[in-house]
Image (cartoon, rainbow, N blue to C red; front, side, top):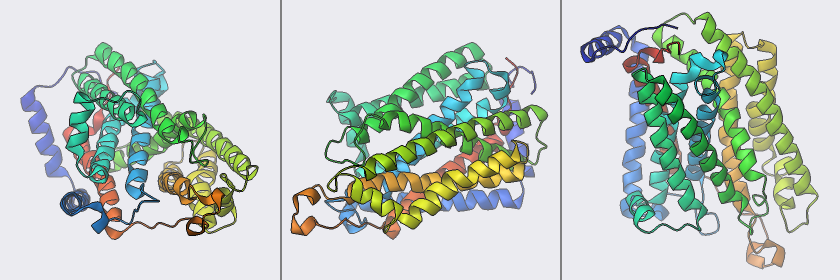
Length: 401
């Protein structure tokens, strides 16, 4: 860590120019690929606004939420997790977590913007939501509260990062604490969007808001480890001992949270299997031994939790290559986890238990090419903001405070 006063505007511009000049070909190639993904997603998203979702998306009346909702959930979950894990250091004063603060706050902003980017093309006419959210609020709507609370959360995250940049640490702590409270409120509310749907037994339940917060912190640990290691590679710097220690303790928190989510998942399966045939049982059966078994066991369980858990334990928080592989595997698995959550909750028709012939089987859904590209655009936006942020903000160096 360094301890210096805030640089002048000329020094900032000169520093950014020098860092961009010395960036290698690989950096600009990654920027180009990320930008292409964002532009492709934007173009297709605009087409859906004019021609309608039915022309491009594979969602339909019985399965109205597809991969774009799953991607939105993934990004906002990630953002909240980054905020909560990073707040352990610079908000609550745990010294070992201090080095990850600034980059993690920046990534929390990048990921929630990516979530808003994806959901904008799912809503079709997003500016109407922003306008009517203000002029015609529905206080009984979980989704209204979700949008409002995430807007407040984003404002606090922006303010926190700005105060960190100008070394106003007391104000940054206030904004960081307020952002953590807003993030918890928004994210538990997102869990309630699913958990309070009485007609969907797979989702319905009071534990969903708690599960969402715990899984958010698990995701945050994985993203912190991955992007901090990549950040040092992008900047061609040697990782400092205090940063190595920060990633070590983050890995330990990640191990704990993985075991917590495995616990949640186990009891979710047991509860579903013990239910009535017309409840969540058919979905759980499909997950464990049916059509969705491979996706569930390989991606969600092995890649998302068990594999990373083993690698994190073996790495002891010190083997960066092993931690890099584990965190990348974890992120892939967690994205599939969000997809499974969104789709499988809708896969059982609401008329299934009534024996209606048209709805006697589980529903199917596979994203269209357009949906895949728009979802990929969200990842492209996160990557683009990360890469540009590393050069503009000089690797997000953290000062003692």
